[in-house]
Length: 285
Image (cartoon, rainbow, N blue to C red):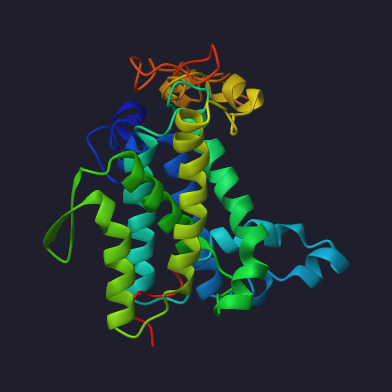
């Protein structure tokens, strides 16, 4: 007798990898899955690693525009530091996505998506300058992760955190990682790159509006239209024929944006708006 289809559909209801992935905030879920897929594909030869690096000449001459994205997804060769970087992408991204700086979307998902876009653009633009000062690898997964960690530490400076079991405040966490990397003789230039870009973002979104009364960075309206104000919630799946679960908008169609939860920081006024308030290891030689 064939198994009951309803029972098959309910096998994942109690937990498992799919349930865990669905529990992640939407931006964190896509970034983590993208990094995991590209890293695995590069290590197993499904994607040539050289094609994943940020190299300006192929972008300019051969229009290999994917090189603007893949350096933020390929972490590096399989080793302990790569696993740690993937873990930190998931944990640090999830932690910050729950309460990002409010740049026009109520401190929600659209604001976090804008922060990642702005951070990635700043990392790419400042890469030639960093290369003049320190050797920086043309892979930016760890740099972008550390950028998120630094901005989170400025957003929540007194939050408790730890490194290797040592309890410290969040504001000291980025510098503790840099010191640890230096002491272990590992690469630290990408961490300094991330701190520089992260501090620029923090200065523009938190210091400039307070000190100078000007809003410099604004979440684009297309992100707010797509992700809403506050935390994005995916559309609930609907039951299709035979009890099979379909997407929120039915099969073979694009789903409309999910609802948005109330802003994560509703008491915080918007600044000038009415929208709402590694492939390179830490211990590498």
